[in-house]
Amino acid sequence: MSNKPEILEEKEMSMYEVKEEISKIKKREAEVNFRVQKTDEYLNTFTFLKQKEYKELVKKLKDLEIPRLNDKHILKIVDILPLNVDELKVVMQGYPLTINNDNLKKLVKTIKDNVPEKE
Image (cartoon, rainbow, N blue to C red; front, side):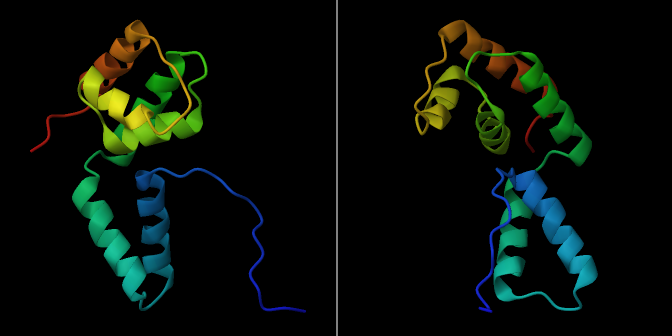
């Protein structure tokens, strides 16, 4: 038997979900390695929604039922939180997906209505 780790499942995770998993690891482990510490620092810098706000925003974006927009797109949008159509277009450039302007505006409006002002 080999010591090579086996991948059981691949799943898209948002920065908020990674932050939650790191929190569990830190509770479980007496000491965490350098990569976990650096990842945690990064996430604390670039995530500012509370867990409840994050989950509500994901649900509201899903409820818009925009054609071809799936979970991985929504998670990326929530990670970046674009506040105008141009920013959203830049985020979506990484995917072979076309979203019409009306739907882009709906997404941005939903984000603006559900994200507290950045401090």
